[in-house]
Image: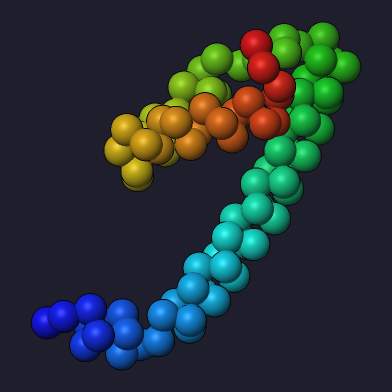
Amino acid sequence: MNAITSPASELGIDDLRDRIDTIDAELIRLWQERSALSQEVGKARMASGGTRLVLAREREILSRFREALGADGTQVALLLLRSGRGPL
């Protein structure tokens, strides 16, 4: 099977790319929503005398992403965590 008759061309590369763009837009929206929620949690925790970070919670999130996505999942989780709490 050559590039001209591949399944991707049969489905329509433009359609596939449009779907990727739609997914990317949703991922960005969800990332921003998650970051805002995480910042709210951090502010509420600190306002009640808690610590800025809850390491057990961060480990749980890292583990969840690693189990679902492998080594790259750890990197994704670290970026998500940092976007919600800022750099350490």
